Length: 141
Image (tube, rainbow, N blue to C red; front, side):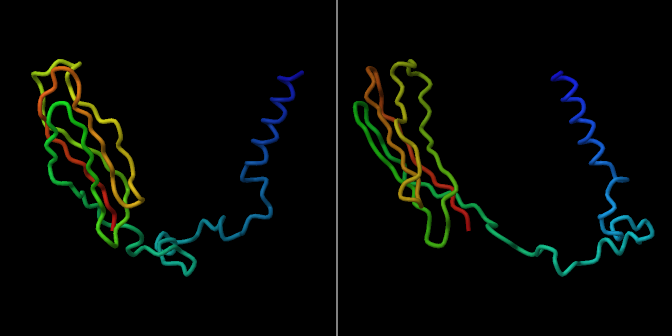
């Protein structure tokens, strides 16, 4: 019974979507004699096609922060006035010779006060060595 009801509902839906079943549709939408150029002409109801919204993303970096072994440090990249934060992140120096257990880690990385990107790095694992890290903010204008 459920399958019959489902099939009947689907048939009604498909029938309602058929072009032949819309007598209330405007006649102009069925006008096949319109020239292609007429459909490209501007309409007073159309949305603007000029510059709208943000057009430029700027990456703002903090100064590199030297993080000695056994330390914790923070950095915040702040977007300039007149721009809006759209995201952010961090970068670190390369530490290929460290074991996975001795590598530093980033504990926090998030939006700070609505117009900047905050990062907190820990470099207190056993066997850690000095690293360099910095935060960046992606700012739209």
